[in-house]
Length: 425
Image: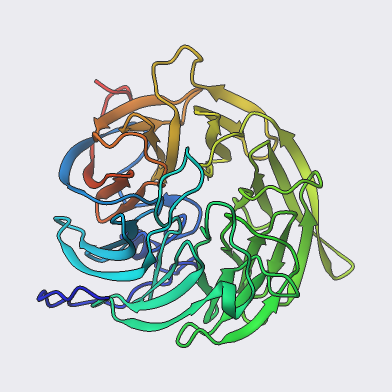
């Protein structure tokens, strides 16, 4: 069911959520889906440089039911998913004050059988060219009009593709590249990953026979054409998003299923594999007209955390357990780690804002750190009051969006002034 709104929405064309755009500054005003405008956990607005001291202040906060979905933002509309205890919903909120614009019923509330997990949806929506694409925990794949939440099309992956539900429910987030909607179903018989028509949901191509749990496709620019990297429980593949042709593949380092495995690219031919048990550096190598993958490093210094790392300036930043850690992205060498006796709570989320890191801790504290020196030093912090959240933070329009199982908040962040020493006064 759609909850109508009297608000008349004037919508600019949404920018492509998943391809590296020509106008990066314009794209950095939005956070249209999983991992942000460039699918690397970063945004590059002006002013957030090394040595600056950002200012943080509360803009709005409101109650919201349980769920693990991040917040996608395009223009002045923020979209996420939640459960009200009876029904799972996709909901659109006004980015400037949190007021509800519309809601869409995904289905009956998803009840977790695991006592450590909260009920509700897990997947983060994608906003692309005026359409919201989302995946419900029972496998409902839907497309909605961003303007009013009206359904464009819908299908159930368990019925249409015989996709098996992961233990905690479907959590994958869609991506769009080269006019194709890419979804990881985890189905067998050549249907692990699908390329769909964004306008109708019709299948254009399919690939793979491996299982998928909580991974999402990643779009990368490769010369003049995009590629899609898809991580399954046992492999990572590079695919042509227009045709589904396999361009390269590589098994994970050990023949064990890792339903949380992710990759992130930090150069034209280099990527980092992030697993619950370790991190690895990879390089794509051309030989005899074929693309291969070689391991460049392996490290136990990043692991045991659901937050995917970010890369900047030749360094990779993430967590070992809950402790913020910096590695050399080319060698995997550990550069620093926050002290073991630190009073910081476990890190739950991270994003790169210009040259600065924004860390979302389990106690609801947002910390902004400058990582350019021998270690990272804190330049600003803000207590949101929304503790124990697992949803990744988002940035758009000068606001950081965070949520937990009971509420959602928008925190205004401005670049502030450069300190003479480059540290917090």
